[in-house]
Image (cartoon, rainbow, N blue to C red; front, side):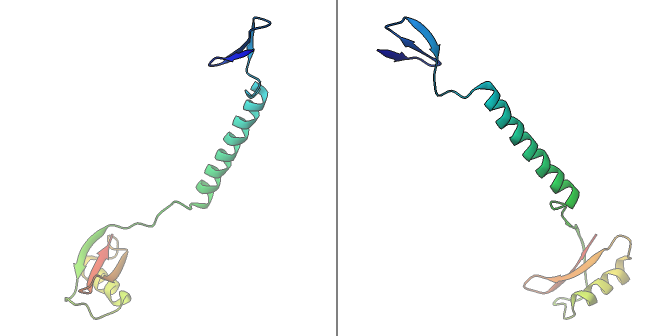
Length: 105
């Protein structure tokens, strides 16, 4: 008769404790951990080198022109550059249901 405990089994005939037979061996676990670590490292290097996660998020700064703004995004950007200057303003986009010209820094 074999009785199971948390980490060991005891064979009542032999009265000797031993390890469970289905536990992974330390060398196999080390190989698994190493391959997972290498995979994660390669993924992080890929993301960092290709700048996949680098967002081009811009901050809303100003509004420009009349509401509704009837021009295009290029017209909006020109309005923003003229009114607020080119160094702080990097783009202009016509957005929203009321067609506002939004300037982004």
